[in-house]
Amino acid sequence: MNTTDHPAPAETTPEQARALFRKGLRRPTTGYSAGYAQANLIAVPREQAFDMLLFAQRNPKSCPVLGVLEAGQHSSELLTGGDIRTDIPAYRVYKNGELVAEPDHVIDVWREDLVAFLIGCSFTFEAPLLEAGLPVAHIDQGTNVPMYRTDRQCQSAGTLSGPLVVSMRPFPPESIATAVRITSRYPGVHGAPVHIGAPEGLGISDLQAPDFGSPVHIPEGWIPVFWACGVTPQAAVMQSSPELAISHAPGHMLITDLPNSQLQVP
Amino acid sequence: MNTTDHPAPAETTPEQARALFRKGLRRPTTGYSAGYAQANLIAVPREQAFDMLLFAQRNPKSCPVLGVLEAGQHSSELLTGGDIRTDIPAYRVYKNGELVAEPDHVIDVWREDLVAFLIGCSFTFEAPLLEAGLPVAHIDQGTNVPMYRTDRQCQSAGTLSGPLVVSMRPFPPESIATAVRITSRYPGVHGAPVHIGAPEGLGISDLQAPDFGSPVHIPEGWIPVFWACGVTPQAAVMQSSPELAISHAPGHMLITDLPNSQLQVP
Image (tube, rainbow over all chains, first blue to last red; front, top):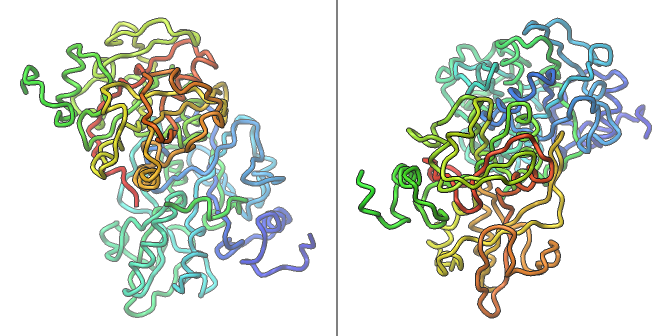
């Protein structure tokens, strides 16, 4: 593989994408490696691992688990030949719930007692949305997806609690049913929307001021559609303050080897 | 509620069914409380809880988690007003992987550090199969479903490993596609079959000698259809020998308050 070729993001294989990010490319992964699942990362010490897995089990819309790397593992069949500590474009390091760094790799802060959870990401179903002829605003506008902390509380698990985080994509009213139908078929990457229209119903007062990612321009008459987001575990970490947690930076995902087709139901 | 009325099993509400079993009725729960999910129980000490939850996450066909009662909890919204230690018709107690008792309740052996996992059970989708006009042989024959230890290994998780266990229902060849279609819609209670026909392909040499439950008569020309089974965690416990584990007795399930409709996709 010659990474200087810079294939178009959608045509990049997962292996090529991970190699690019490993070498330092730092950018949101929306639009990368069409047809392959993207994943959120949340890694916590082994003592908090049961609470995190239970939090995921109790909040499956926001935390669909694609895989778990047990303590001491740095790779798995989801990232063959890869390394969870280097292959994501940007990371976040939380100490006692405080964001303390946003590095390009986490080799130096990783600990062998960390258990890494890979959570499905809605970037995965953007390729099927595009294939169906639907517009994806943040891709058209060349920016990261906007994400918002809502006023809905997740179900807590042991020491972990926090609000639901959502991502938002606006659609023309006549396209929303199609967007629901398509994304419903991918429960492993958040599935159907949790809320359509009326952002105030989620406690979101200003769509142009997202808590994570970037604002997108909403064309006149389009409706904001909200999906549960894999940044939710990060919000739980901020609220629940485990000693150490390492995540991806929002929108900067792990590109996995898992084909979308394996996530599709029924 | 007057338990002496003995309503027909299918018409029994989940609350009535749990009360009957709490009072000592001991029988398989197939056919009970049509329209409500039935659940397998596996409870292990807190130190093994992460491994068990991870085992379930890695083997979702056999171990779809409907709920988890954390250490110290005896009830949840899945069994409102109930008690996980008394409301199942028959239990199994495993010490170091050995089956040591099969009591009617486990009040005396329960420990406050036990974490109880409720795993979906295929009895749940028998009501929709019957509604679709399909025969369910073990119900027609008034017996428990036959279950078999296969030669397929589950994905291991930490200290836990073991074989896939399957339940078997025979169907006329022309009905199998319908059985697949209906059960596919219930991934939370094992979903689509894992194997159709050819029991030797699962390492099953004699259908009339199940490892759990009871044999069923297979009418001439009918084909055995196999679903992943929630007894799989018990097989893992037998192989992996945690200090203590408490489960339901195969076929003797917890009747939950969860309506089937909430499990149906899409």
